[in-house]
Length: 188
Image (cartoon, rainbow, N blue to C red; front, side, top):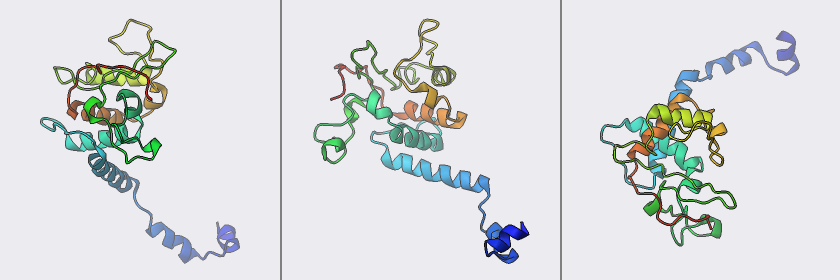
């Protein structure tokens, strides 16, 4: 270490000084999650029902869902009329169909699922355990054995932490329930 420090022009006091500005990992993690929770509430496009829900998880879930591209497939169309940023318009999410599914993926027979809460408050009709199984394995326990989600990027979502998956679930429990999208179609 002496040779490296000398050859790089560092003194021992300079190397020690660096150690004093190190942020503990736990504090960095807490600060990062707090920032993501605040950002999640700031970017959320729909009214939320926070009754009986963990607000920190809802905010973190909003951050993950609304920065992770979920809207691109699970809201159809993803943007309200005149609000498509890909066309140079100011972004406006289609809140009338937010997470209600209905995007078709031709030529396949697949259609994105409605992730809004059902009558019992479960997103896509799944319990938390079923939701986590679906995102970790690609198999929705409500589907026939052996069926795998073909379009959903579950291999990527399955690598998220348990906290992330619980947060996504809690956020989806908090969004407005909607019936399945009444006009499924490919995204324009």
